[in-house]
Image 1: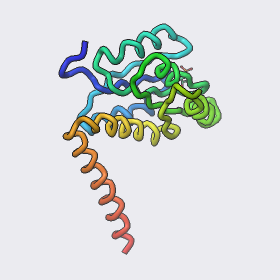
Image 2: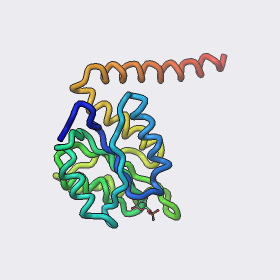
Image 3: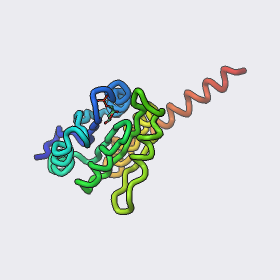
Image 4: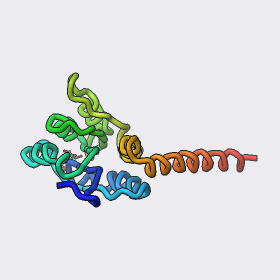
Length: 167
Ligand code: RP5
């Protein structure tokens, strides 16, 4: 049952080995004042848990699911199969591996009817997944929208300061 303080965003990762990269996603969400539900769930090793989590997420107040996995990354697709919530997929570069291209293609190449909003590989994608989740929530949350405006302003200012420092 959703409450005032229920997490609106879930960050799900396929393995504990994905955790270091996904900390940047969690950190980015926290910077916007959001505390996500964080889980380690595998589409392959704990498939029943994956289905159950996705199927019940909406009733627990989750509005966006961020799902990160490496190798043959089926976690985001599995989540999307079991829910009508928007699912953002983060492809990760597992070790040893082929740099995340495997996970990128596994995550992005969904069949028509089951979309996964796929971001870039690794840490940059993890941060963008958080920002994209905030953008989705901000459509019905004016305070969050204001934070996004500030975020963009600060980001632009940081670039302009570096530009000005070149002389
Ligand atoms: C994927 O396989 C996980 O998301 C992880 O990126 C990769 C390797 O998992 P471990 O063998 O490190 O647990 O399912």
